[in-house]
Length: 140
Image (cartoon, rainbow, N blue to C red):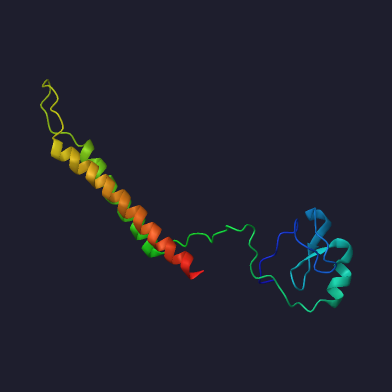
């Protein structure tokens, strides 16, 4: 079968139209893939033409397709993480000090640049992912 099978519990029997309450009471037709009660399976399959196969069944009204990790999506996320990591590394690097001297405070410019790069990385990653995800959802 080259199609997705519908959920048994909660579906309607393709033969009788009755609601299937328990998945063990039903099965899928081997010709069309639709849900059918066990007691009607043989009768349905003898008359089934195989038409009406389920291509895709939504399980919820707000179901969204999974994210497609294209090279653009991966590029935006990886660039954002890289820039944020540069900012974190800049903030972690301390100035060279000889042993026995008091620690020097972090220069304000360096601290600001580190936080700025981390924020820029977050914006690039999130904005890039969001714009590409909107394009993916618009296609569907």
